[in-house]
Amino acid sequence: MADFAVLVSGNGSNFQAIAENLAGTRHNLKCMICDRKDAYAFQRAKNLGIKTYYVSYFKREREDAEKDICAIREKEGVQLVVLAGFMRLLTPYFVDRYKNRILNIHPALLPKYPGTHGIAESYASRDAELGVTIHYVDYGMDSGPIITQKSFKRDFTESLEEIEKKIHNIEHSCYPETILSVLDSIEKKQ
Ligand code: GAR
Image (tube, rainbow, N blue to C red; front, side, top):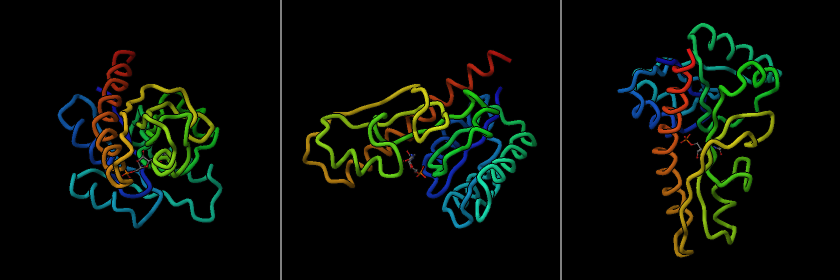
């Protein structure tokens, strides 16, 4: 058994997919942590019966907000931190404390198209394959060691909305699977 938390900033569809897919496993999603008070993810957490924490970054140094996240992590006994649409860069203060214990998902085939417009930028490219990346988090923007990538061939007739839907569907199956295997390996090391 291993305990984990999900960090989000907005919609929370990945958070929901993770919560639903890992619900029947030995591992526990202890809480959802969000940096935006009005995020739809709070509604999803309520529907799912998952504990939530709001951590404000407003007019604060990032490290100060991260100290709050560390305190939650300690209180909840979290062994893995999962970023799912968490749109903030973590500082070395946080990353160094949880080395190889922070995962992120990005809706493009990294190292291409990091940042906040991964889908739009890969759609606008002439790349024949698009996809998603799951990686460990380091100091950079969507730049840590890659754990897995899932790609698909496009036929250039799809709309942006169709590609978006396809990418999100892949995320929703691929991320829970990868999280499960990382949690299994954390459990084995205990
Ligand atoms: C997801 O597509 C995720 O890959 C992306 O934000 C979206 C969040 O959606 N993350 C990044 O772009 C990280 N650079 P969600 O809130 O519905 O899960």
